[in-house]
Image (cartoon, rainbow over all chains, first blue to last red; front, side, top):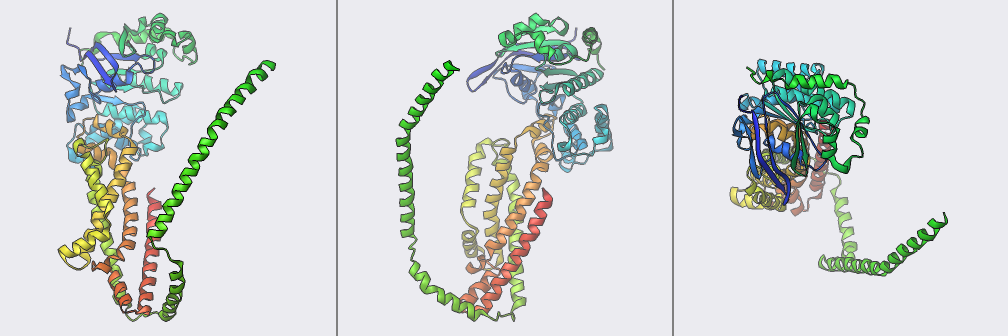
Length: 280
Length: 275
């Protein structure tokens, strides 16, 4: 068995003297879709920011192919793409220029300064926009796009980066459930197609079951569950959220389930097969 | 209903009692502040040597001058035109230089993006100092250093505006948040590239619109720079006043008003188009 693509060892993080992450460890193979679940304030965002190299851990390390992500500098960072809850697009630039930002880790700096990219890069960016279904909006300023469209531009930017790992911090928390499901579907499909590993924090357990291959449960900064998605059942959910939920099925019932459960299990089985591990 | 009546009013009475008990104290505080404000303005009145009687005495003199100013002296219009063009040019060069200098300084003086956090406070102090010293004072210094003429004025304008423009920009950057910048940084772009790519599109309209504002402001401010010998129309203004040549003075003031109004309209129109 190959060494894991991504490994987190004893991650610990303090914010303002409070422990928000404590001894979190896990390892990921290439091509895994990992969902991180947990109540608000459990440390999901902090964990993901540290995994993406946006913040530093106080102890422990996150390793991408054995290299500490906190020490990745400059263009080495392109190996990890980040999708944010608030999309974090450059509002005054059009969709294409936003996606081209994903190429900045690949091209010489002057191209970024002049916003002048090669034909190949522009074609790649346009292709990424096409894959998220926004080719028509390539020339449109992103602050005129809808929330769902903006998040799709952000996903296209992440794809243009050609990363090994995409870290998505509650990518659908700012969107309505129907559009959110579409975004997650897109993200999971594209990552699977490209053999990209995905770490995604979520508030909706049913999304995790449907799109992820593995689920991490985080509570009070500690890892309390690490399960294949299909074994993450209501009991596990209740254990994770504790008394916060009267009934997990009740919480789920508020969102209509467009996919049949049997389908999603098949999907999960598909994503957990090891055929992504030897990606060329 | 009866139960609610039992508890409700009692609680309300209690809340009212607490509020009434508090109110004499509040009244005292209001009275103290009012007295303090009154004392402050009384002291200021005294320090500023306000004397309405002198104004009443002086007004007829002003009226007399105004009567003398008519008809305006237009013989020297070409010279005035050249001087006021000098003033506008001084303001334009000074403001443009200030804007260019403001960009890197604003990055340094923004807590959330500065590449050198240790220089954050020194940068802010420098900007406050530049902002605190008027371009008039800078011009005085530069007249002594580089000699009479518009160049001294340009330097004065540039330094003062540098501080103001950079501080405005830095505050904008600090308020705007670093979402887009974080995102672009995480694509593997270098720090400078990320700032240019993610931040510049956002701050460019602010930068241009505030530059237009500073230019207009500096044209107004630099009409007085000539008084200290730092070039522009102010020089003629002072000469006319020294010679008590009121027709000449009148022409100059009208000319200044016309140019500033014109500039105000143009820059207002341009700024509207930027947003």
